[in-house]
Amino acid sequence: MELRPNETFVHSGPASDAALRFIGRIRTPWTTREDCPRQGRIDGPECRIDLDPLWHGALRGLEAYPTVEVLYWLDQSRRDLITQSPRSDGKTVGTFALRSPARPNPIGTSIVRLLRIEGGVLHVQGLDCVDGTPLIDLKPDRCAFTPKAPPQPGDSQTA
Ligand code: SAM
Image (cartoon, rainbow, N blue to C red; front, top):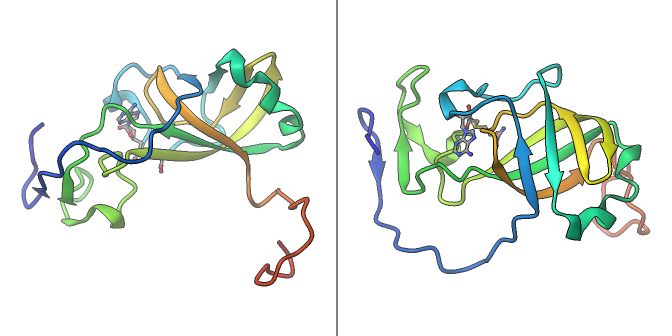
């Protein structure tokens, strides 16, 4: 893939450590990366998250949360960039100073509005990924989540 001015990359070799398990697919109206919004909007178009049947039981209780954190694998990204020059302003910064999809482990996250769950399908708003993007995880939005376990040292008073 082509580099923009001042962008640099490394030869990082094949990824060899943690193996992720894709647990479903995200269905969106966007067929190319260029079509996608840069960040999802909570009032954006309705999208679908199709969870693999193996994991349907793991949805129990999630319907109680109006907002959910979705983690996904930005599978069309390059993974070797050290510095990047975003198209928006061309100002070169390090990969970790950006939310760019190009990163060593291209994990995307969005907080989505949960409209409804039908079987293993979640209907949501707030995504920004290409149709068919692999799903990694779903979690209640941390702002709405109250831990079930007793408080631990180091927990904030409000967590
Ligand atoms: N909201 C996530 C985050 O902040 O972690 C992702 C933000 S990233 C800037 C969103 C962009 O990634 C989209 O505008 C699109 O250009 C690109 N993108 C979407 N789906 C992708 C995919 N499956 N593989 C690689 N890039 C993707």
